[in-house]
Amino acid sequence: MNLFDVYPLIPVTLVKAEGCKLWDENGTEYLDLYGGHAVISIGHTHPHYVKRIKDQLDQIAFYSNSVQIPIQKEFADKLGKASGLEEYDLFLCNSGAEANENAIKMASFATGKPGFIAFSGAFHGRTSGAVALTDNPKIVAPCNAREDFHILPWGDLEAVEEELKSNTIAGIIIEGIQGVGGIQVPSSEFLQGISSLAKKYEAKLILDEVQSGYCRTGRFFAYQWVKGINPDLISMAKGMGNGFPIGGLLISPEFKASHGLLGTTFGGNHLACAAGLAVLEVLEAENLQAKALELGNELIAELKKIPGILEVRGKGLMIGFDLDRDAGPVRAELVKKYKMFCGSAAKKQTIRLLPPLSIEWNQLNSFLVALKEILTN
Image (tube, rainbow, N blue to C red; front, top):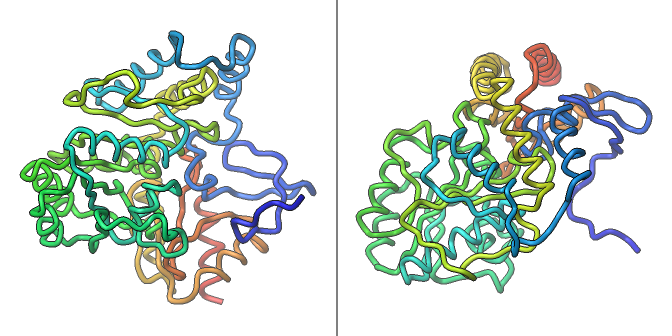
């Protein structure tokens, strides 16, 4: 049986990882500047993370949400304190797509309306409702097309208000920083405008922090860079489990829970919560939020000096930059010659950097040296 082909594969087989380093089956060492789609937040095989999961595995790995699971409450309390959102409720699931599906369901239930607004370049997942919220033709099947889901131009507040006037919009969903779209950072005016319009027209504001959350940008969530934003719903995943599948939805106090409204088989299982707790504990103990901001600011400043780079965007260690050429061959040379992994984006000339937050400056500097050699030779 063959595997269904879903990605253009890099011809490397990785067998070991530690911190920001990866090794293939031949013992060749690579530098991870992508974190496996921004998933690795605290570094590969962090000792505390490994111990937390092993200890939990010795006790109980899984039982359904039909019984009390105290580690879920422990995780929720820790997350509330870390994010500053202790008044929110937490729904635990398995992925960012699942978190976004439940976010739009909650908004629709609460308002009694079917419509949603998303933005060009957005990526909210690969499940049915999430796919309907993107304009990427590669992943939108005919069954995903929804007349009441509107994909509007990035930054266009007038278009947002015009759609809201129809009184059919349950919610507006926006990424704290667009990831797949090429690291597009919403301006304060745009995000504040969306928030004000959502309140004016009684639509729910959904912040997708799946890629931009968990301290990656130098704030716990990227939207927290902008004053006065109080999302109704916040989706998260990726860095939340450092590789263990876990997702979550933060739900503001105005929503009332009822049995059967939301549900999950695997979400919030004992092992997932152990992984999630380990991540929060390491983020705090190693002050990785401040580190992400400090290193990110320095990296952005140095990238702007390199000939061949047209524009640099991002915050913290969520960075995208546009080249004066196709980025594909550059990324390929970084892997083949310099043994460094970085990411692509929707635009062919864009490179994405989403390294583990535990990365050190000397590792980032080695990337800068390699990139400058490629672009200037």
